[in-house]
Image (cartoon, rainbow, N blue to C red; front, side, top):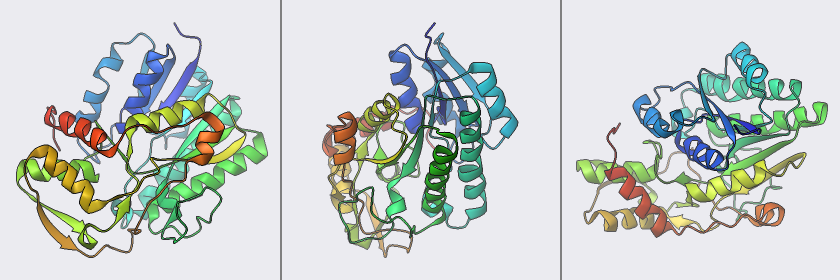
Length: 321
């Protein structure tokens, strides 16, 4: 049995299940909290953790981070030394008419975890944030010190609030918290509301997909293995309080992203063009120099390689939403 215990919230989801793979491979004990919400088919999430359930160093807690007493009991019973907080309601467009629920889950749930963490004296707390906090800005690539005061939708607004609250917990209680701003993560197990999945699904089902601004939006798509590299490196190096970009640092035009998937599929997707809604920035673009300097972060997966892995995974799915 490993002596180091890490709590991973949202550990049955896309990024979370990949992180658990890595931590278990490093002989860590992993406590996973997940409520298997039906924002997409819970069977997908359960499939993500089939192998984890057989591992002697893995514990699954089916519960909700909004449940303050549950969170307290998990810390009391399992005594994690570190937390990676990934659980959240995600998605910019999905948040537009659900600000109340996003606030309840993302902000109050995070406060419950930070409060337990400071009471039980954690070594390190990793808080997942998003590139969407940068909003619409002409300052590219995005650097951590630039303003993030104008998010475009409730989802990034809740993540910004969590970043600010994290600083308060560091200031008041000395809690080590590193905020990681993820940039457009894709790869095997990706959520069905993300572009890589939606294009693959539309091609396979011969359905139409909406593409904004004639495909001229640019996104800094980052392969999940590179994201996990950054998370683990940050987890191993407490920094007091800091905010760090974790991205590829190489924006790709949306139309080109779609073209690569079409090439992999050997088939065109039916496209409906539409103007981008107010929630969509024209570009996301990570400056990753800080992550490189602090813990040697170096993304290595090209967009073509990453999408090839994603396409291969998609066609092996037994459960499609």
